Figure 1 (cartoon, helix red, strand yellow):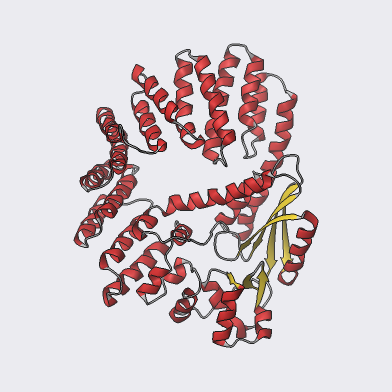
Figure 2 (tube, helix red, strand yellow; figure 1 turned 180 degrees about the vertical axis):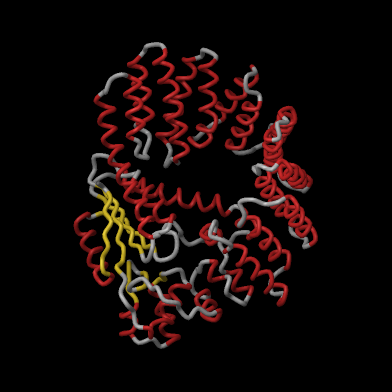
Length: 527
């Protein structure tokens, strides 16, 4: 196995880390002490409302970015190890990151993933103020900032050594802390003056200016999906802003409404109407009102209740009424078409999707949106001659693996149905090139690529061309990172033989599957 999980007494962790660095030479180290390991400091200011409404996408983008960095580092080859030190129970964030790293280890190289888990020790209660400040900072701070705290509080050096430890210039806990700590708004404010704190800390701060300073796109991404953290933070900010007038009311109001939306996976039509009325009443900027309306519409359009989908249409219409760029208007039409389609109004969905395309016709918009709109209209026109032409137009515009996979699965299917195998294979070949050229790929990309390859393989099998079928099975399976020995078995059953290349891939997939299962076991152990 390429994954090792070690439970070590806290005092021995620094020595184990030093040993790993000595043995592997190249080590990429991550500290998980309360914040996601993919979180990096923000360098630019960001608009609250926009960042809150996009926080879930931003969370995924930041994870993908760090995984891409890991992949590029591992691709340099040689003996390398990704090491993650965990304080406390692993989170879903931790495990997913570890699994993504494992799937990017280069086959045939001496590369591995090591998890260091602390066996908790008891720390003196005299150090609880130190530990509380570390917790408020997210579990670790640069040594320079920590020494500023020491100077202000007069902490004894012996006490610091007893309750803290250092990792690569960061000061963190000496061992995981289970007992309650003296968390106060005053301590939260003090920590926030020197550190980029999580929003759970910022929500405690009474000064709205300081609480606003603590907000970043990264902190919003970090809090996404974690209960009602965003709502608590933005609600506190709004209440403090109303009392003091220290920040513009519209700024705090827009953030509060955006957080209410971002914290929800479902929303009712009446609540959506209330949010939009309040946004108008509180004079939230028009572009932010449009984003609120669009986000609410997206939630409602996916609701299984037809009554809620009717409310989605009102939200999308409201978004289009505001003075926003054409790309945003097109996105609202696209969302409205989804709601109509789910209500079985195919004609209405087609008309609305054509309206979306008219908005971007001749405009300088990103390829992703053009591909999405053309592909979605083609799906609505399935079974008509127009559909093939729309898919082909989308494919011509596609310029990377993300938008390429969005259209290629359907395009290859309709081409094969039309007897255009040569063109279907040309599409698949270019898709593989886009995939191989990508800096990194998602599981959705990999599923789409394998689906295209397997469809071509099945077509060749139906024609008795076993060798060609094997070639396409191999192309798809070799690009699947998630261990799937059962998929390889199914391919070999279909072929009626066991080619050496597929047998070799099966062994590699079985190893990955075992490692991913071991990493999932971290969550079971934390329960």
